[in-house]
Image (cartoon, rainbow, N blue to C red; front, side, top):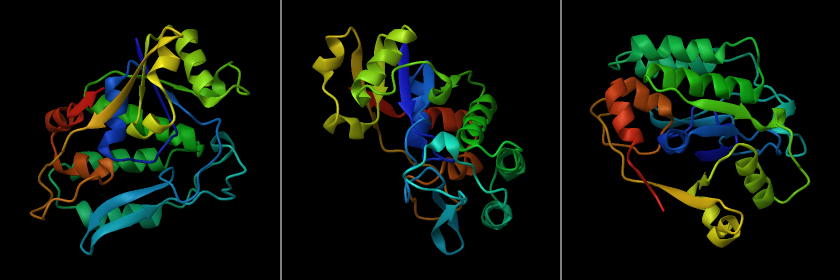
Length: 229
């Protein structure tokens, strides 16, 4: 079984979804510190002015607080209005915009809960079943090193393969995992391109841009554009 772990990001780029797609069980890593100026609560979309950063505020956000202790603001009207203005003519707006509204207007404002709801909704729309768990709800040794926590989670859930994002190459050694019976793999995204409203293609935007412009089958095919090494 393949396991992957990642902090919750709000509507991240397709590479994040490739990591989920490649795994059998995906852990939302929410019992770690909030990262300010990261992608937990923001990403990029295309507007009439080009690439534009969207942000959903997190009241009281601090690197001294755990993600699991923080919530998204309930005020998402500005972002939804921008989204509607930017994508109202997109091929799949009529399906995707209500989905995004439902996700962002969820009564439970917990960062991890909103993000989990988005991942589940998107994969359900694509006809793919995936398993998600929040690490804040698991019983494991949080005082251990990051590497040992990951290995412990693999053992706890019977995973013989752990998939990490490319940045993990500077943090983890394959031998450290293999000595514990776990095969460490890194996921590398291949070039992904699709039609973006007759514009010159802009890569690595929020998954919202992909969903607005591509059919479910096309999105799935884009998710398969990766290698495990």
